[in-house]
Length: 343
Image 1 (cartoon, rainbow, N blue to C red):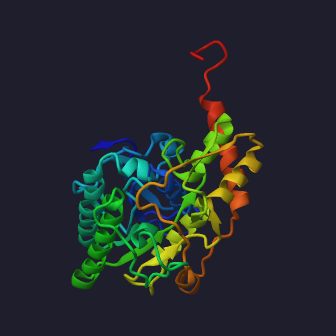
Image 2 (tube, rainbow, N blue to C red):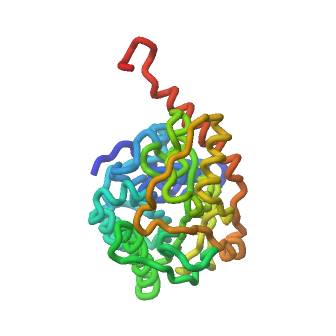
Image 3 (cartoon, one colour):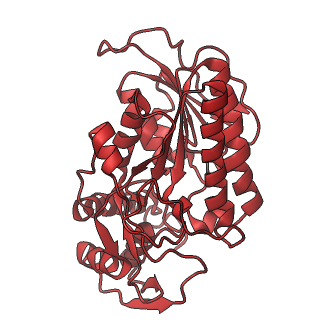
């Protein structure tokens, strides 16, 4: 475990008069986790970011490295974390989330979901902290019901190529439920649907970043199946707002809450929007559907609306423009200086 930056104690007051809380974000150098760290720091809290950097990146949190209330520790949650001092909240976002990444080492993926959840739950129990589990819409499998409410138990395959992630997340929900029921740990469970935005890595296999990357390269946009399968894309800022509202809510208890955008789009429609937004002349190409790839994915967010007064505010079109601008900027930043590197 490596300490990069230490922050002060969690007993001081922030500049906006909110009592500072010490908050752990496991997976805090990842896509969603890094945005959450930003929001928590902006809210005046002290953040301990834990990440093994298997899919997270120091680039995502480089701007926080010198912040006095931010601390990074390289740590894999399949091992217990020793944390001194008080902790008020723990967010568990530690897991690869794209099929391409979580299928590289399926046993480690499953351990991350199960052992990682248990280790963080034990830490929350020790500290008297509230803990939030970032579960997933993948617990619904390939649903026969749409939109998917939290009461839907799913249509799943326990031995398919996606099972290491899907079943790991389902098992983690069970651990959260039982640690709440048996030991009184304050838990929250968010079932996160497809999320996109800046810092979503190109090349990790997720649809929006892949389409944008291909469009900017002038390469064909690769569509699995015939493109009629659907997804519901939630912009990362909206998702982080939902996570923070869920963590802060005193009434919801251990029952899962869907967080996602109910604006359901076909993959073909998403490809067309990316082409229009980038001005790319890329063509489309099709390939076989991967095994167990869900045909529909759309959240019923009635619980989130009722309990958290939350719903997404950023349209897919607006979010695409923001993400494209970020990816173009990153490409320019990473491009070697003229004459200074290989072509």
